[in-house]
Image (cartoon, rainbow, N blue to C red; front, side):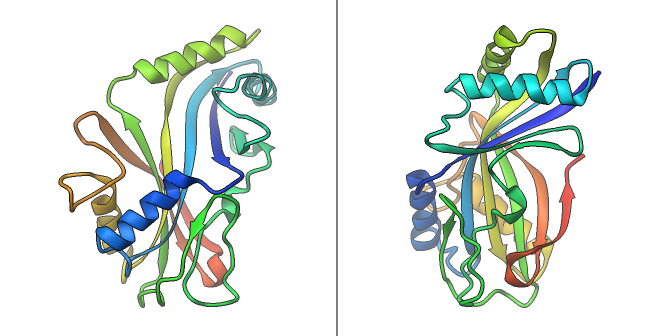
Length: 225
């Protein structure tokens, strides 16, 4: 039985990479009026071949706890999912939205998420985009796939995709304008345009778009099929 599996990992403490990205995007690239927060994760997605989804979850969870290339329980929070509803780990992605809109009651900044106050949101609202940045060559992904398979017994993984995941929360009049702003933040085209990926050897995809309601709650989520 083939089961889709996802692993999300982030630091428990302040993430200096996320801090630096926030400062650069807001102070140097003029997104202070658009970017409301960002969180930096590491992500692995794969298909697991096992007798059932629970077996896939159990076996992969065992592997990632043993292998420091995926998680370190002293440093990281993680969320491992198998299929539609099986979950392991202590990272709550549905609440991990870094917001700082200037509203005192809106304190949903957790762990290494980098939240900040930069004025009120645009009339259209707040949108969160989960952006996976991957290398164009699959060498690294194939290496992680082989690393997991070497430890698994009675199951295997394939179709690995992995990279850095950026959850960007932006304020914009519409979802279309929010997405356009995110694309400008992501792709480095010059010293004054883009930051989070180099298009010469990296690419990206939006795994999910979330409209945030009052208090930073996820009002709607559209995940990529």
